[in-house]
Length: 213
Image (cartoon, rainbow, N blue to C red; front, side, top):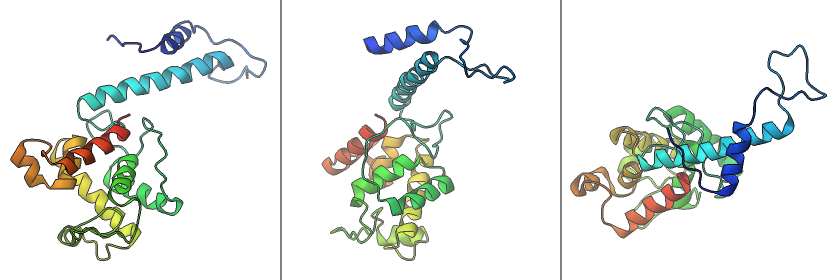
């Protein structure tokens, strides 16, 4: 496997990692510990390299239309690839985490959908009738068992189940799942991919740009 080093700082980090041999002893090394302690500079080099490697993996997964946090084609509930602060309200964090764990969807993806759909507004109502944080249409909410679309937890759980179904439908392809969430699976099938609707294309681009950064 050949990995392309994108910058001088990445190359320096790679050199540092490749130069790490036997762990260097430090004053605080515990002689009875099963794992020798690395010197601080070696540990810092490994941590920096891990970030570079994570970015490379994220780029490769994005190129394949796969979830960033997964290695087997399915979504995980954590994602460390994107760090942009999108202002998730503290009181909603437990609901997103619960929904992510329940339906196997990356929590970061759920948060980005909510940000784009309603800016985390519980009482949001679109001109088309979409309701709540995840902007569920009445029929969709009913089909998902969401009895109160304006209840934050119920709405987020419903939205998570819906996007999880779409991810499964499209084999983990995040872009197609988002397109279906926004424009419907019928339109994705009709156009053989992301529909040529400006709203949908902007929607998919905005979320994937941040999710797969």
